Image (tube, rainbow, N blue to C red; front, side, top):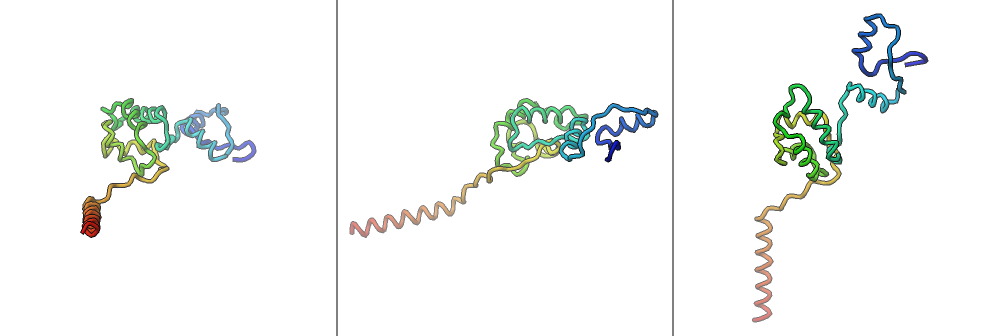
Length: 161
């Protein structure tokens, strides 16, 4: 905060207890006030949970994030085999995902509702590809195919006739 003046950025509870106990010294790590260093310190002290870009995360990172969630008290991920879920998510083409709902279709027992919501604590998405295009209505393609066939038949008959 200034020359020989410091501000606690992590483990505030420990600082408060040491102060209440009247301790004059407390072991600490001093970091620059750079926002990135403050964030890293808060992650290390578990003040904040780091978020993983699921769009490009490797299997090991996905597995670590899912394990973290599974170990939380009252986790909604009970009954989910974390290893299988991580493997199926890693195998999926996540480059176009706009949200986490495609996970519910991977057959890994992560369903809509609390389980899917829990994943938002550790994952975010930054899509790199457009969503896959949906097939056009079959009515239009059938009608245009029929029109082309009729046109081709008429022109053949004119040539023959």
